[in-house]
Image (tube, rainbow, N blue to C red; front, side, top):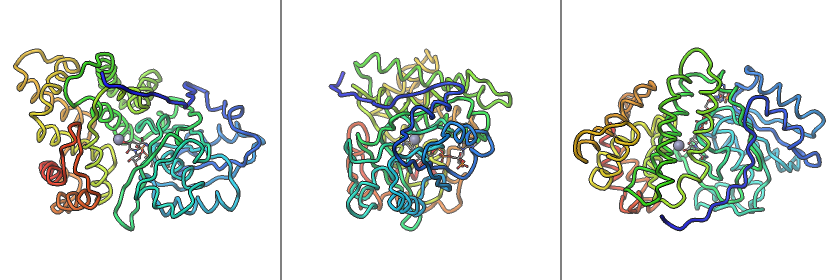
Amino acid sequence: MLNFEFKNPTKVFFGRGEIEKLSTQLPKDKKILLLFGGGSVKNNGVYDQIKKALGTHNYLEFWGIPANPEYEVLMSALDIIKKEKIGYLLAVGGGSVIDGTKYLAAAALYDGDPWEILKKPVRTSEKEALPFATVLTLPATGSEMNSGYVISRKETQEKLSSGGPGLFPEFSILDPEVVRSIPKRQVANGICDAYVHVLEQYMTFPTTATLQERFMESVLKTLQEVAPKVLAEVFDYDAAANFMWCCTLALNGLLQKGVPTDWAVHAMGHELTAYHGIDHARTLAIISPSHYRYNFEAKKQKLAQYAENVWGITSGDTEEKAREAIEKLEEFYHSLGIKTKLSEYTHQYKDTASKVRAAFLSRNWQGLGEHKNLGPDDAYKIVEMSY
Ligand code: NZQ
Ligand code: ZN
């Protein structure tokens, strides 16, 4: 097992009705900015619960953070934060609103061009950001209990990430009741994103971190088990609760302690969102099967372990099990209604591999993957295999 440090300061309030605790958890002595997406919270009762809990707190509202939080929109929010001397942020939404809020928390105290934070990128240390909290409305990213974020900029077709220990939410409220109103397409995205978060930390090579391996296999199996229940028409609270907690645990930092990690699927996936606007989770379903096929030799033992421990495949040798693992993975994406080829999302896909190679070259990304040996040419081939 590799050495590690682990600190996660985010306090979680989990369960039905927990949103009312905002009344005691939010500061009374600071001006708060509430940040929202496009308005789903007005139709599902979340906004009303928040208004009630906030009572006499001093707050303003900012609406309109879009999916794949957009730099230009966030700059308008930053103006308000500065002009109104906002001292605390509350994100109410999915990964996009939460990520946008993290970026704003960092940008508010950053002395310089805010785009630099993403471009360099600049890590945000403790006390270098405004304090903030979240009310999660869409289980998927884990952003509610981690310190990373991803921002898009249409003007330059870029999607860049940053983070740092100063960007953990102070607290996050996770009420599984919010899952009721989520469109099935977004539920499927959430399952897929969380699933691939685990794979990025798991699908490397066999390790001696036995507990971490079992944790990860458990999250994968639980997601598989709850997927049909949360996608069904009838709402199932316990399935929603397990789905939500899986998503948080998949990326709150615990699973990756003591093990090697990959994250190349995300690196390539973000480019597909930047060029084609494809939902984040779907880009991962497009890239991951090709990534595992391309890196078959390096990953086959872990693929075979996944086949055995997650899918119960016991027959065949290592290579056969590993190949079946990739097929099972693709079948799982399809069972969520998620397509796995780039050409199924856009007709303008042919120059995508070249654009990814050029972007990775410009950032000098030469060492992706758990062995840090994948460069722009490998990314080109993997993306091309995903057409
Ligand atoms: O904007 P509103 O009207 O609220 O609608 C949203 C949005 O259109 C809707 N929605 C959210 N909760 C709902 C709901 N609709 C009905 N009922 C509810 N309860 O869902 C749509 C998508 O929301 P979004 O926040 O964009 O989805 P998600 O949570 O998947 O976030 C995606 C973003 O997070 C980044 C992605 O790259 C992408 O930009 N990620 C962040 C990570 C992190 N911070 O750790 C890790 C991930 O790998 C990912 O990269
Ligand atoms: Zn993701």
